[in-house]
Length: 141
Image 1: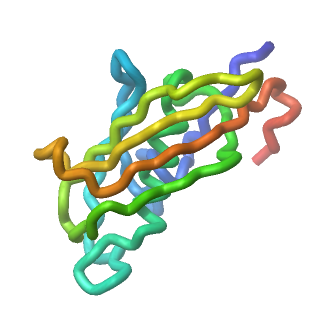
Image 2: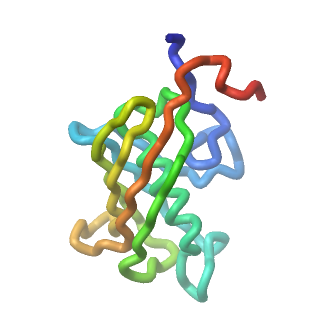
Image 3: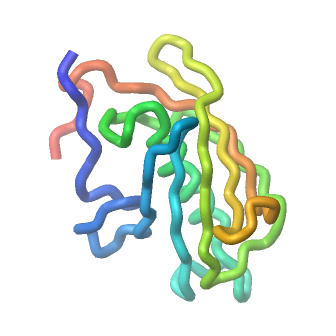
């Protein structure tokens, strides 16, 4: 099986795509972590981050689990439970860990908190990803 690629122009974490959310990703011993800060252009309700961007944040971090960000994966299902409103201009952290694997599918659990307080849970997320197993399954740009 050929090594699969992560898209350099990724909307979530690219450092070259000007429209990127700017999520900074890192591997951890038990999964992955991401950090981001959403400014005024991410506003949903007055003064708050749009929930869809929190979902995109979690999706990006969860997809980084087990594969160091290098395997192409597709989100098959995701459930997010919003626990608290998220203020704009807040440093956020998402921690994700594997929750099981079945064939080409892997399941991940994540928690979004404020970066300075792990007890300030803003959202909890469960997702299932499908790994593309052949380079021929990856669409050409």
